[in-house]
Amino acid sequence: MAEQESRNQQRQIAVDDSKAVCSYSNFCRVTGSPEELIIDFGLNSQPIGSSDRPVEITQRIVLNFYTAKRLLHALHISVARHEEVFGGIETDIQKRIRSDVVRS
Image (cartoon, rainbow, N blue to C red; front, side, top):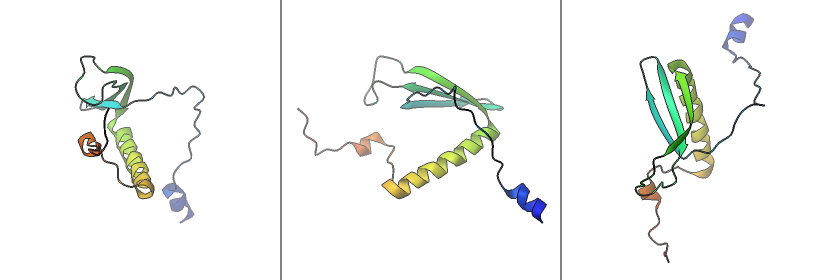
């Protein structure tokens, strides 16, 4: 019984983030193949409207589908917790634009 309980507990994995690089992204694109997903991240300097400048991809992460599914689950839990505290997140920018703001 104790052996089964220990298998059901999540493993604690030591993480060394001393060489991690932090960057900001407001754009991502997901492509892939039958074996893996490719997630590109970049900064879109013109998030509203069209731009004549392409989005520069600054980071690319390649995942197998097992890792992608674990990431999906972790992101789902994190976003759900955020929305519980701060309210729903509207991803459609047109719905977030306030019409009562006076522009000069």
